[in-house]
Structure formats: C-alpha cells, structure tokens
Image (tube, rainbow, N blue to C red):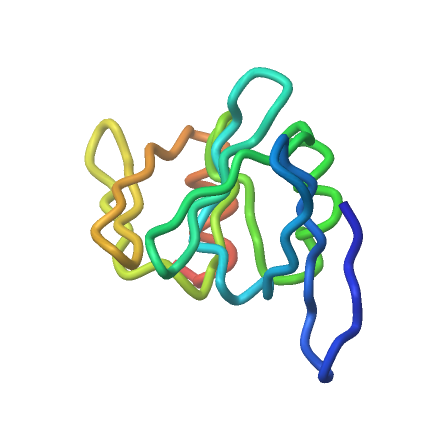
Length: 115
C-alpha cells in the first residue's frame, strides 16, 4: 500500500486479490481486521479486501486522521457522528455503521474530541 500525492489530495493504492484500487483517504469510513487482510469500508458503501494487515494500514493512515478504537478497527475521525459511552462503548459512523470501542480506544477517542 502506498500513499500517492494526486491532485493535492491523499490517495492510497490498495492492493487486493483482484488488482489495485486508487482511493482517497477521505473516502474511507473505517477499516476492519480480517486475519492477515483488512476490509476497507468506503463512503459509497463499497468494501475492499486489502492484502495488508490492519497494523500496516494503521501505520500509513495514522497521520491522516485515523484512530485505532479497537484491536480490530481503525476509524476515520471525520466519519464519527456519535460516541456512545455506555458499556460496551461504541461509535456511530456515517452510513449507519456501529463500531465497538475498547477501553483504551475510548481514552484515545475522548482525547481527540476533548471530552
């Protein structure tokens, strides 16, 4: 996976089993771990199965406004609509996605939003 500076926007080249896809970081709602692969959920409700681990994707997207909220989830902060601090905690994202939040993830999310 690489970040390409195209048209002054961050673009990613996502390698999948079917080829390579070029997407904008802003089009990613969240990323979910799937063994040694990662499932990338996009704003257009499409999904890509990337041939990279979540840890690898996190290392690339961390500086682009993404946060690890759970051991299996990486979330685009711009996609967050609501934080539910009930037990278990969860995030409500664009396109009606609900993502679990771990205790450590909750600390990181609260820090980012100044809660």
